[in-house]
Length: 434
Image 1 (cartoon, rainbow, N blue to C red):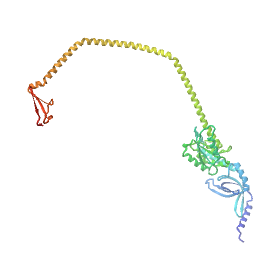
Image 2 (image 1 turned 180 degrees about the vertical axis):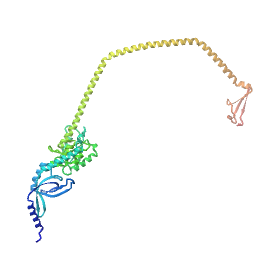
Image 3 (image 1 turned 45 degrees about the vertical axis):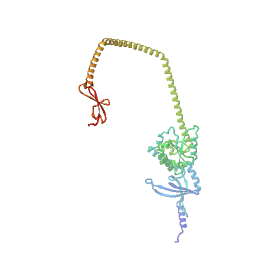
Image 4 (image 1 turned 180 degrees about the horizontal axis):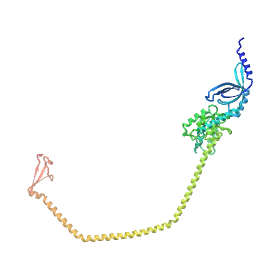
């Protein structure tokens, strides 16, 4: 038996495959990876164990350009999405073994209704989990501040929708003032979830600087909404401390993010209109409160003016009564004062009469007392008269006219005058004995 070439072997296998598997098969599988090249679609398919989530089967598949162009359009129209990893697919394939490229499953058809049902089941499962966690309505319980003017905006920096949002917000016909600040993020593709969550974390660090958050997407295909239908992003939005307003969808589409947010509108311009209308309501409420306050104040002023008018109309009679009362009081006080004065005059007159009668006797007694006192003083003076002492044999020594009582007050050379009862002498101090 001769040896076979590789081409011959592969040709034999190709004949066996085409003979053994001539028909097509409808197959359920999970899409692990997909890519387009030259208009052809290349798929990596997998099946996972439901208990362990580990792959138990894998295969590659191809969809030629001639079939893929029509299938792609139909799939996007029905599901509203592009093919992406993790999707459950129902595809019809037939086996092919090529001498050069080996074995492949060739995709003949894709059932978009099957994938649509799986997407719907995934959305319902995410919603169920959010409700079980008790976070589905957390954003709805927040109150949008009445003066919501400091806006954190999550959007693509180059998106036309962001420009429309800012233009409508800052050029509103009511001249209301807003301060939007952009936090750039990826708004389509597989990076949406990670990018938006990262930006939310950044805003959360400075949330006291903002009144609310607006997430807007400037156009794009309906298929690009898939990034807003993830559990992790929904949980982050639901638990965010500030009200979040979304404007990322189209008229007929609503993402899970729309459901979980505080307020959902369809477009960026609708989000700007919502914020403008909200602040306008606040402004109108202030105007109404001002009108009510003005009316209350005016009514109070009218009431007080009427009360003052009534008081003024009663004033003459009240004044007359008050004057009469005061006159009666003055008359009573005058009568009491007159009585008191007469009593005091009588009392002091009697005292004056008593003093007048007793005054001569008092004067004589006083004179006698003073004469006796004077005699005593004269006697003391006479007893202390220096002349009397001199007559008794004493002498008085004077220095500069003053009596010398201590020798220590004198010094050599001082002139002394010594008086006797008869005559006097002068002397000079020659030595002082201490």
